[in-house]
Image (cartoon, rainbow, N blue to C red; front, side, top):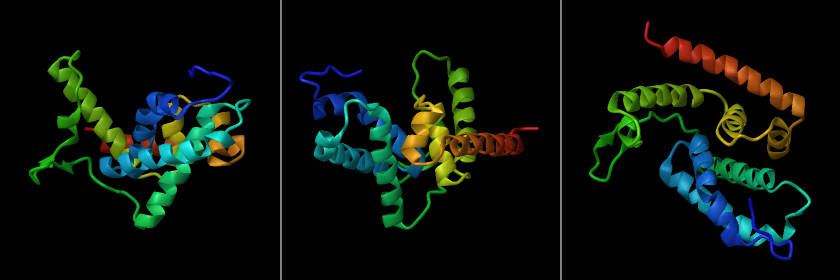
Length: 183
């Protein structure tokens, strides 16, 4: 976790440990690399400006993810659009680049990479169809390994509401994945 000196966190420690995690979380919420990068940077600025307000007796991760969630929601409100994008994106030359082409894992065999990319693509398609609040809960639990208590604190909802939303989201995702699975 953090190396604490005089019970104070430094912004360098926060950036080193959490910038990539916050970027990944923001990307899952907004579905766009550029926006996710901007959001992650904005989160780090907000953390830097408010680090003195952080209570060291509390868990840092929920505090940070709450800032990230609120920043992403504000970003989406400013943009006034909800991302329902495909998994294709435009490369520098203006051509489309499939999600499967962006998966890089040199340790896997090519057929394993393809199978993994296909599963990720289907999961991401299904994830983008559920509401932002549910997508946030699923992402925080499955990808960031946060507990339901921590998630409840981040989304400012009762614990049982978070658990119920998670279960409902899994049911929705399962039905959507079943619907798009090859027969």
